[in-house]
Every structure is written in C-alpha cells, then in structure tokens.
Amino acid sequence: MTLKDHLYELRNRLGLAVLIILIGGVFGFIWFFTPLGPVPALGDIIKQPYCALPANLRFEPNGTCQLLQTQPFEAFMVNFKVGIAAGMVVTAPGWLYQVWAFITPGLYANERRFATVFVVFASLLFAAGAVLAFYVIPQGLEVLVSFGGSFFITALNASDYISFVLVMLLIFGVSFELPLLVVMLNRVGVLSYENLAKWRRGIVFGLFVFAAIATPGTDPISMVALGVAMTVLFEVAVQLSRVHDRRKARREAAEDPNANLADDEATPAEALAPVEVDPVEPVQQHPATRQQVPPKPPLRGGKPKGKPGGGFDDVT
Image 1: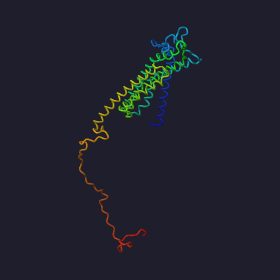
Image 2: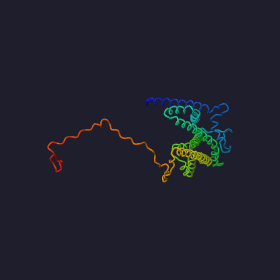
Image 3: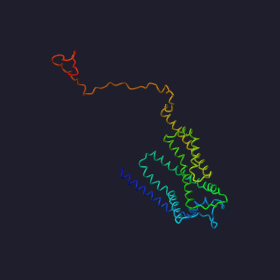
Image 4: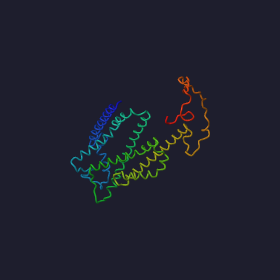
C-alpha cells in the first residue's frame, strides 16, 4: 500500500471508531436516567457511594439522596460527560477493533499474539482497578466529610462529585496497568529480575508516594488501598520477570554453553579445542593472466645518461 492508501485507511478507521463511540454515548446518555431491566440507572450507580454515607453527613432534601445543581446547564453537561465515558467503555470492543485492524497488517504473527495478550490483560486490569475504586470511594468520602463533624452538612455539587468519581476510577484503572508495563519491559530486555529485586524497596516507597499524590482526596483509605494494590501487582510482575529470566537463561545455555559466563571467567578447555578444517585448495590462475607478458627490450645506446649507476636525477 502507498502512503496515500494508508492515510485513507486511517481516515476510514478513525471515522468508524468515532461513530461507534458516539452511538455508545447516546446509549450512555439514555442509560443515565433510565434503568435497563434489572440494571439500575447509571446515575443511581454513580450516586450510590454518596448515598451510602451516614444520614447525618449528607444533605437529604425531602428525605431523598440527591446532588445539587448550581448552574442551568449542569445537569445536561453531567449527563453528557457520563454518557460519553460510559459509551467508550461499553463500545470498547468495537472501536478497539478498528484500531487493531489498522495496526495488524504491519505486524508479524508472534507480534500479533503478544499484542492480543497485552490488550486482554490491560482491559482486565483496568476493570479490576475501577471496581476497587468504586468500593473504596464510600469509605474515602466518609473520612473526608466527617472532618467537619456536626459543624458542616455535606451537599455535594453534581459536577464536582461526578468528576471526583470519574477521576478515581481512571486513576485506579491506569495504576493497575503497572505490572503489565513491568512485564513488557522485562520481555524486551530493558528491565531484568536482578535490577527489579535490587530496586524493590525504593519502588515500593515510590508507589505509596504516587498513591498519596494521585488520589484526589486526602483520606488515608484511598491512598493505602491504591498503594497496597499497586505493591501486590508489582510483586506479581517481579516474580513473572524472575520466571522469564530463568527460562531465557536456560534457553541461551542450551544454545551456547558459554553465553552465561562472567566477564572474568575463563572459557572451558573443551570449548578451545582445535577444530578440523578442510584442506587448503591451490589458487587457480585466471585465464586472462595465464599469458606471460614479454619483457621490454633494453634501451638503445646502453645505459641511459644520468647519475652514476644508470639512474636519472629528479630534474630529468
């Protein structure tokens, strides 16, 4: 395919991906207020962590759990934002297939298998992180809103609360991709098990620092939950890297016994034994050079004039 054909293919794939996301956004927009059979409305699902707070910590007009709308377009914008996010998640197989169909023609068979495994595990880990965040948010909210005691009553703005929930889901989901990144770097040879084991304490400390900075709230429950989860996943990635490095070392040792020798370790004597070679064949003369060129006749008059010994000086 020419560059022009690739650009046309990219345009068509991106157009289909955007169309699929828009269709999913319309579905999410409708689902925000409308239950789907046994599945409650999306707005009620997102509002559940706030409604799970004790009654004395949240604002309940008319005895119902509701969020505040402080601007005329706030309800529409919240519905639109949540609908697009839900549409991207629900229709992820469709638009991811468009991206995959554009990339796969340039990949080898083994690269396609690796990419397939990568996408599957990335999706599962992101979903696991989002589920954990959904269960952590109520405890985190309770800690945050209880600081005021009986002096405050919590009446959360709908836009701020939805943004808080979506950011928490995104942070937990992306953070759960850490083991996949470590395993991938180990596969390509950038990180080895020895280096990961050597840097383990510093990396774990950095993970808890990242959890403290990344979580939008200052509650210790969210930070500890994210830090512990990332530490466990990192340790799983380290052990997978250990298994991979051992298999790689055994495979290299089977192919080359001297591959794992240290720089200051001598090569075994049997590896330096003389190797039989084929007998040397005589060089055959090219047919064009077999005819001898006759020597040039001597100059007339004997030796040429010049310096003693018959040579010429530099001037002549």
